[in-house]
Amino acid sequence: MSSVKDTIIEFKIPEAEVSDLLTGVNRGTNSMVIVIRDDDTCGFTQPGEIQACYEKIWDDIPISLSVTPFRIPGNDKNLPKHLMGKIETLPLHENQELVQMLRAEIIAGRIDISMHGYHHTCYNGLPEYVGGEELGKKTRDGRTYLENLLGLMVSSFVPPNNAISKGGISAVIDAGMNLVNVPSLWSVRRRPMTSKTIRHIPVYYWHRKVRKMPYPYVLDMGNHKEVGYHTAGPRSRRKQLFSDLDYCERNNGVFVISTHYHAFDRKTQDGETVRALVFDLIDRAIAWPDTEFVGINTIW
Image (cartoon, rainbow, N blue to C red; front, side):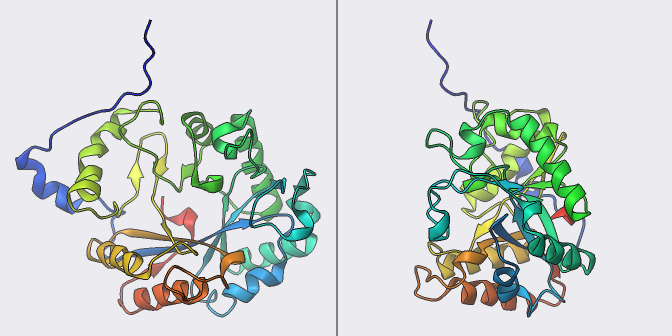
């Protein structure tokens, strides 16, 4: 018996629907919404590292930290040298200085929190939410742990390494969370399918394949929601990011800037620092008078 490696849903966009596809569906506002997503806060993060990046702006612009509850360092190339190769679990609650800072800034409205994996380590060379085991239990437990520890509702999940399998998506759904990632919409091998998923494909495809631009809205899959992201990091190009931002503004969409506090002083492909790129994107967005800066858990 031959195996089915993948199933691809093919379709043709009817001409009569083109005008509707151009508009899309946003979150009901007449302005662009911006989220600053910063990944990798965990048990070894020092409060000063976050403050050095954002304390000058977070009174006006909330920062959404993607937090790993029980980090296992492993061999991540972005680790501090003294943690490289370590396999001991580093629970967030053991870093009381960080926890106290996060609680205070959450209460002040300066920080929002998403869950960023459980251990954020690789399994057999694969990212946690691709190769890991017991993801359903870990996702439920991780969400409860973060909510109880930090005192807020955490409804957003950011996959470690921005990679997630069909089983990983199911774990996020079962935990009652939404996904800051949009895996392939047309592959039943890569994601659970619903009727809403299928209905989104023409609009999503119109933006991505016809206009060759990122889809600018939140996708409601019925049992959860998803949103894309735009990486501001060492591999980023200014021209592409600003083009994507301009497109999102024209469509009153949701623009998630994804970055890392530990990469802020590294250089991008254009030779500027990641910090400069992030702050230039923010300045560009501020120039549009109706732009809203919000925490990640408010966009759903």
